[in-house]
Length: 384
Image (cartoon, rainbow, N blue to C red; front, side):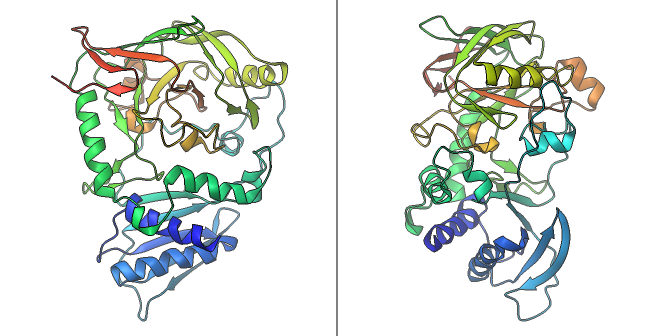
């Protein structure tokens, strides 16, 4: 596994953030991931010539903070924060329970705050393979997580790792095409009639991507994969029905198929197997907006994940083609001055979030006011 971690470190520092000679890392980690944290710091030293801060966590609190790979006291503040994220055990599921924010977080259902300020410095969240994560897969083999991540990120060799600047050019081009139109509306449907849903986006909102930017305009990829585009849906606008056979998790349980019917933006009925239905029903009752259609996520290409049924990692599971989010949108989607204005514009405001993946085998058509196609058959159309 040493080779995997070597490539993982290189990918983080070359792709997620283009480290330069002025950079200093701050790495937050539990004790069990210190070897990988040191590998990151050693790789950073070769690039920047600087040491790194190592913050050791215990029960999500700082246990110790030290400096590593530095022959002198580091005087510069961190320019990049890296969090090595461990998968924690989920609470026991209790039917019809109203869950706390902490429990929602452990179940990967906690939504973003409605507003988050733009980052002062780059931050990267790195999911770390462990036994708890491996338990989510049928073979429960932790080693297969290394292969899953390697396939997804293309960690075949150091030479094949793409640079951040390559992602920036693609994302900026795609967003320019997506956001050059006015008055977008969407129609999601299938040949068999099992999916037929229409909705509109929040007025004056824009498509955003998983390529982020600091206040000083530095680009970075906080979740390691940049090619997903998302936009807030007017929480009252979704009407129709959807059906999916793409696996997704609800309160820790793998749902293999489900269907939902929407009226005025809200799920009014659904169907699934008995165990899944119990959990879906509990999710939908969590708060006033948890059942509302809040966000569309899409990717232009499905090649990176076409053979991966699920990751059991929320940020990556949202990348499987077309995904509708119930409950809330990402904070980056929100274009408003305050919470009252956001709610009046039609943004959803739930404490909870559930991504429903619909995959590539559906038709999504997004049109503007002139009925020109913006997105169709998995392709972002060039703006004319």
